[in-house]
Image 1 (tube, rainbow, N blue to C red):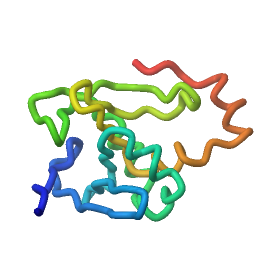
Image 2 (tube, one colour):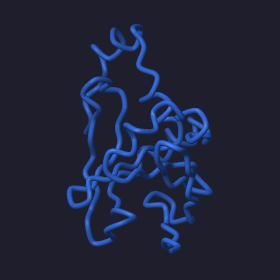
Image 3 (cartoon, helix red, strand yellow):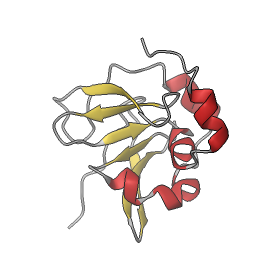
Length: 128
């Protein structure tokens, strides 16, 4: 059974399914943002470099767009979130299906939490 092609909540472009043994994600064909179904982001951390192939600078530009709707539950707005272990990472999450959207480069950063980042995060700016 084929699933419907999702549209990117940031730029509206089609998303392509990226499949790994541990699970799958949907990647935007334009901005490189990533959509993960509930908890898929945790299962795919080891494959972050292969999945998050977008340009991190483009991701930073799209990170400014944060009033978006869930690509799986279009009537549901995504909530702006901050990763508690790495507060410099801002992502969006659906309160209905618990999916997550990471802009290009954010998932690679999320998967590679280093000791140096721990100290940098102590001074992370608050999300407005």
